[in-house]
Image (cartoon, rainbow, N blue to C red; front, side, top):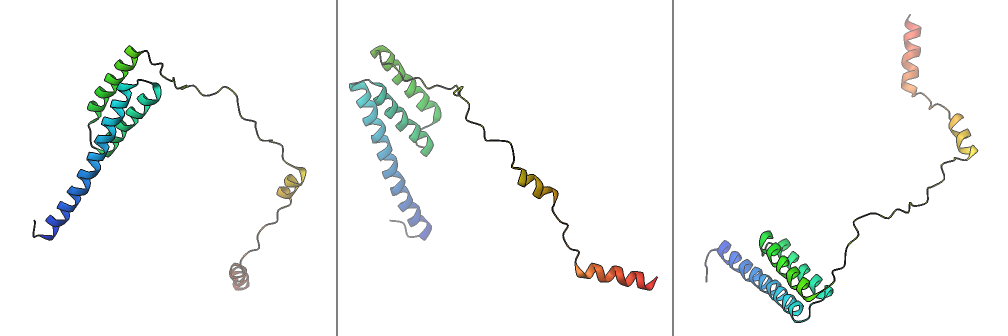
Length: 133
């Protein structure tokens, strides 16, 4: 057991990380085994999701996950699983536009706006300048 305070903390962190990593790896293994046992689009999606989670957590490298996902796709193709295609195109229906016309009272209000009053100190200065001339 470490004696130094930072080494004790590091040991605790290592235990926590190991538990989390082992859990994520178990999730990956169980998801891939479920897919291999019964290939379907849903089980494929869960397996891919678990692999992506491992990349996000830094447990597996990106290329390792790409290779494993490729293997899963090959199994899916040989099993005849139809993959749900995502539509990348946006819908052609346009949302309803908001009315552009303004009410006549709003237009009138803009025309009849008054100027802000000048600060008193400015008025005093100008009056004082005129008096000295």
